[in-house]
Image (cartoon, rainbow, N blue to C red):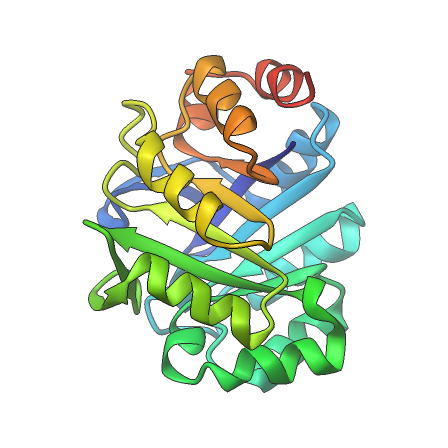
Length: 237
């Protein structure tokens, strides 16, 4: 199982939000420096999110993200503000490994197929951000439908993987909610990457035992609740 450290960017700064709320932000400095630090500590891939893009300002942070791509050479999955197939193509051509599409996948599911046909299924990760069992989009501000139903639809459209974020526990560092992850893992055949609430080595172990392909670590990693070394050791057992 892989471990993706999160590099979330808002207003040009690496941040962590609680429950996706821009007002509840903690800043952690330069995003490029943070990305390089995680790789130096043993990460082999990065989870980069343009939070300004998720909130409707996709043009912000572009130069920073391109600098991360160019200076690290790492496997990168990128999300936030990818609202068209042209946006996705631009980032894939710029060197990201895969794009994460959430709102676009809900609004125009055929975009999944179009991107997969052009770049391969592995290049398309559909975001399943769920609150109370329902998918939420547009920066988690709008509800879109049952998360299992939508995940299956994304799979049928050609998504190569799913990013499941449990918004109910995201950013709280209070541990995972195991049951929704297990339900999703059993409902689809494509790889699932889990995010939200993963706080301790025990949480990492549970995710590994459920059979997710990878996990994303954000708040717990930045607050020091778990170290990257601890997470990787448990993930690779």
